[in-house]
Amino acid sequence: MRIAIGADHAGFELKQRLIIVLRRLGHDVDDRGTHNDDAVDYPPICAEVARAVADGIADRGIVVGGSGQGEQMTANKIPGIRAALCNDLYTGRMSRAHNDANVLAIGGRIVAAPLAEEIVAVWLSTPFEGGRHQHRIDQIAEIERREALNTAR
Image (tube, rainbow, N blue to C red; front, top):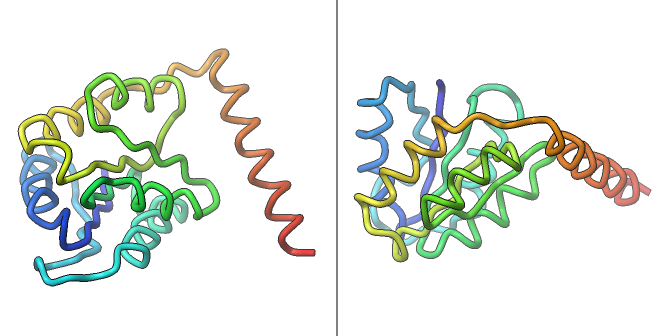
């Protein structure tokens, strides 16, 4: 898989570690920044990761920040993105199995690196179950479509 990844300064160290893990797992990594631990605003980076997924340049995306909350919120502003904040294995697995999450947000100040590595591995290897969950994903997409139309007016 091609994975777009990005982080702010608070998530930089964990992002660097996750890049190593992703490559070890055989994934192609598209690092969208930041490239050091100097203070930087996360919204442009997270939007760039999410756009790469929405545009089909990347299969999935990962955004890392201090808590992961703002990163998730930003990614979810991009149409077609279902970003999930997963700071444990259960939410990592369920975000894929039931919600077909295509962007993973992690809090670098919340989750220790070894657990974050496990979350990423579970998130990437868990398939979407479809079935009754597909109907809900379709409802999310319809709400997103309607809101876009309302905003355009």
